[in-house]
Amino acid sequence: MAVRRPGDRTLGTLRARHDADWRDPAAIASQWREAGDTDPRLLRAVVRGAWWETLAALDLTLLVTREYEHLLLALRAGQRGPAVTYMRLPHPSGLVVDPARGVVHVASTRNPNQLYDFQPATALAGAVNGRPRALADRPLVPVRARFLPGGLYLHDLALIGGVLHGNAVGQNAVVRLEETGGYRRVWWPRCIETPKGPVFARNHLQLNSIAAGRNLATSYFSASTDALSARRPGHRNFPVDGRGVIFSGRTRAPVVRGLTRPHSARLRRGRLWVDNSGYGEVGLVDGERFVPVARLPGWTRGLAFRDGVAFVGTSRVLPRFSQYAPGLDRKRSVCGVHALDAATGRTLGSIVWPYGNQIFALEGLPTSVTTGFPFHAGMREASARARALFYGFLTNSRGGGAA
Image (cartoon, rainbow, N blue to C red; front, side):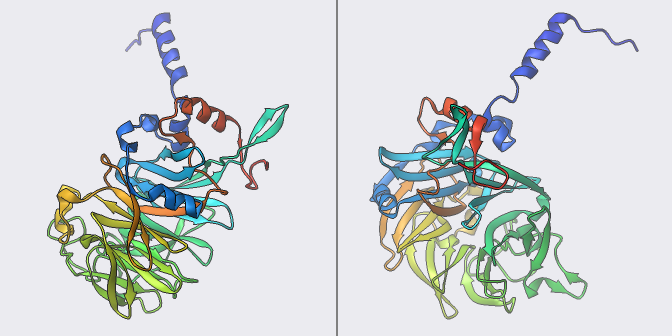
């Protein structure tokens, strides 16, 4: 069949369209065409108590993943007032800082999964007389992305013995994430072992967080259950109330029971902390018991510490998962982060996003390391600043120029 030759006008229209495509740094950096279309309502926040004052006193930049809004946030109390910066990623979940290498790792859990590495941009190349110009704000820029199978269903990230690990929730296991790419299963609970071998084919436990110790044996892992069943996480009839556990890395058996959809297990000064999400609680483990320190208005997930302050995330309860939160009032749950006195549980301050949904992970960095991400909420010149940054950024990594 003869193919009609297109006219010059048609070819010109196509050329113009293709020439205009993929010009937005936000889309290029996240490998997502719509990344630049951020609904401003997602960034609107209400602050209660001494929220910004607490960040200022700690000299802290707080990183937040909001997975269902496909949004990475950084919050700090700047000299000119509160500063909120952001970057869009597909469904960001786990977040961990590698201080030795100056890298922030973020898991993106759409299919396929991705691992993003961010580093602070320390200078712009050739900005002044051909010489680099130092950047005082040191924004975090993506320097690498690795693709992994969507079946891993990565959740939490942690450094164990200085090596990056993640919860492969889709395989009921913990995986070592190789620096050269790929992954290797390195730990799983005894409860998934059967006469036919371990059950790695599909999610049965919602094995979703890592309290990282010096090695796997001294680490702990939270899950929604330790029982294999035909009713699996995601099913409406999956039993959750009091079924959650924390596994010992050494024994691969539960050391804590009675939790409800636990998340964000963390070791702090030798004590094991965890969010008891289905009841909106955060607390620590005493022997084999969970002892609540505070109860908050929402599904608790995300936990980070700085000095004597615990930062705890809360999420709205999604209507289709309301049965997973028997201890919460779904209508009163909020999407926010709360700064608590870790010793007493007293709330020092909170930030709440009325149009937000789900918090997954929190992590803090000194403001001397970075002040946040490349895109600034409410700043008119943000687009031009971002273009200049991505055009000439330098980092202190081996692969980039040093300031």
